[in-house]
Length: 373
Image 1: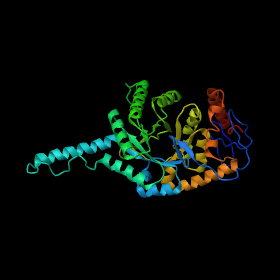
Image 2: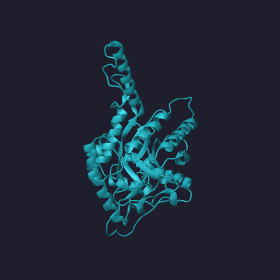
Image 3: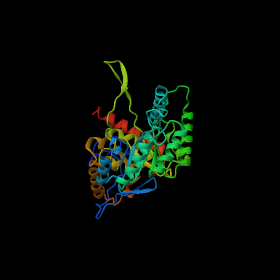
Image 4: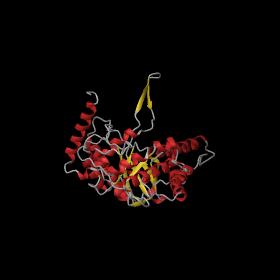
């Protein structure tokens, strides 16, 4: 993807060669007059109009009612709650059942044991469903529940529960690393498509699919997901990679917040998919500033999801992003977000494959030239 330079480093591929650089293939230069009057930040995502394209994605902030209220006050368009993990809920239920059985065996005088019966017990699923209801009552913005399942039955069962709890939409957090050497890529794709189709068949609210970028032919797979019932695609899931401790010689997780540099991958795929599928597109990973939000909208995303920036700067950073985006739009002559979406996507290019190849060559050539001067 190529872009343009507006003096605020609004680039697509890290191009820092200045204003003298010639336009690249498919490059769009916007030079309209400054917009006068109110700026419309509303955007449509998963069939619902949001007041802002800035969405708070799943994080500890969205799992806390005071933080949710602060995000609402800051003007985010919607929130995605932390994921409900099927295996955690099942493990907790299994542990409760085990303790109940153990107590019964050790204490014959207490026929029911000393632990609560599981029917109606406040297990992980019950707590999460209660939080969905509380969140809906606490804020005015749409509340999107996030689900990370293991079994197809778990995915569909908890989807129905989340819908009944009042979630406005469900985000399927498909966090899977295909490390089994006996498992072919087509099998992984087929199972994912069957999962989405099964969930869509029971969900009475829109479902979005949060994906990794590691599918062989992602554009084709995205189309199949839409055919299977996905109303939205969230690009992309950010895997937390393991690290090795040289002190203990052990492997463990290492959490690091994203940076704006990580935005380039979702930017590319937003631009490729925009206008070619009847689906909402959310860009996530690397959205930190109003400039990042502007980029993903121009590329073709309907919303920009952010986590790390809010964790780093606090909920009110969403207000800063909205205000910065509004100022930028006014300077560039855009009166609404709808005018912006897809303005620099590949839909305006006759041959997307040639666009990608030329963009790759241009980037490499320009970067190499800096060492030959």
